[in-house]
Amino acid sequence: MLWKAVVCEDDPVQNRNLGRMVCGWGETQGLELQISSCTDCISFQEVWRKEKDFNLILLDIDLGQGINGMELAEQIRRENESTAIVFVTGLSEYMSRGYDVQALHFLVKPVEEERLWSVLDRALRMVEKKEAFLLLQEEGRLERIPVGRILYAEAFSHTSALCLSPEKPGGKVLSREVRMNLGDLEKELPSHCFLRCHRSYLVNLGNIRRIEKNRVFLEGVLPVPVSRERRRALFQEFLEYHKGSISQ
Image (cartoon, rainbow, N blue to C red; front, side, top):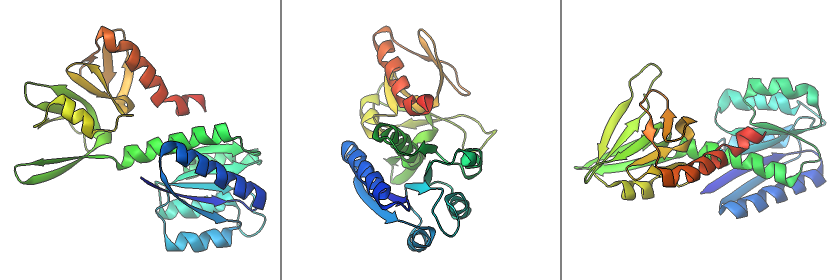
């Protein structure tokens, strides 16, 4: 997976350190990295005009000249709503405005590598959830199903049934039969998002609302059973999946 990031920081030393930490994180994730470096708003705007499909922008708020990082983020959001924006700052008074531009996080200088990596883990999960699709080819027809819509999958004799969340708010939960067994389907889905909670059920960790002793609750559907031997793994994987958002 290609991961495109921009580091916009006016201090050359901190700029290099942030780039180095992002590179180190990318290596642990096995990502192909493309990192751009900017030291002011003008150089960033030049990079932004050429391409707007960055996965991540590490953005200093106090850039020293021209518009500040918060104003730059407002410009970005008018053209792109999906890129993860992480502010790097010592200016706490701007934190409340971060909600207006849907900032993923604020990192206080000097930035600790462990904290940055944790935030980058969250950004990666967001990107994968938005971009991942299950591609089905049946009877000469191709269908692309967003992974984020799959609540769970249930095994039958030679097929599986996908339980899908509504395409639009207020819509109905849908069931979609696919001609593959649950094991083959599991191989086609992101392993960090889906877990076998029962021999006949594969559940999307991102769509779980509550876990009880032997049941998993998801939005708008009946509870899914959890087998005794898989209960501990489900709890652990669910905590790991949401670790970034819980700890911040």
